[in-house]
Picture 1 (tube, rainbow over the protein chains, first blue to last red):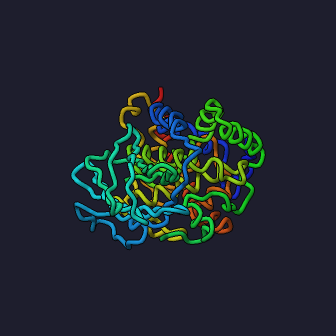
Picture 2 (tube, rainbow over the protein chains, first blue to last red; picture 1 turned 135 degrees about the vertical axis):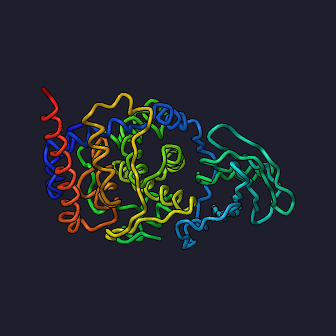
Length: 161
Length: 221
């Protein structure tokens, strides 16, 4: 690729030979074809009708976790917010899988679609807005909350659990 | 959070996944920006071919950012997917489509940190060159069979260097390449201070590869 002015990198003392060596080495670690294909397919997740709930809190970011002190069965708290709905989710590690326990605020009965890379799992939120989904595959996840008729669908940001 | 000099606003936006107000310090890749903007506009209109082209064009950089943080290929795959899924979600709210490449790189960096922390690992801080996390940027094992001697030499030379050097060198492998300013921002250091110490990383690599050349010459009849 030569569409960039490589003199930009001169400040590093990067000469042509070294640049060529690095590019060559980079070919051993390119994006795997299946990874690229999955990202292309992610366009299918595009929903233009739904209200977006953005990730505003992630306990994985707040904790001053030191290397090597990770405990098993870690609980991670995630909060998503849209103009009309807050979605609080605990992501719990259960072996190699994740359990999601959530709360819709204000409480509402809703169908909650847990969308992950390999498909969708549907659970119900009760009148207190509580829901839970077991046996979720680790990886990118987004929730889509479908309330009663006349209420906007709310879709959360994607996050890796 | 180890955000250092990455502007607080940009961090907040990346965290909230809201790219609209993200303003990288430099107008990254203005030359290709037009094309990227056009692809974003077409994707917004529902053109999946434009989306696929965007993934093909900028995917190498997203991957390099995740791998430069020392993520395994499995974790890098998660970061790669979540970065593109976030773009799908935020496609309509991006105010500067010509900077989608910068948006993706910053998002991928942030998501990499999130995964590192989820894994209980420390997150590197900008100028701290003593930060050692035992980073080992191994190329995929199955590819080593096909690797030529030169490629192997570069990877094994890199493996002997300090973590901050490994990060820099992995970013320099990105295809399409990052600019100097982008690399500084992704390493969370001031463009002014990237020179001398990072130059030493390159000197070490050059030195080791020169030794490899000598060795090869001696053993080649």
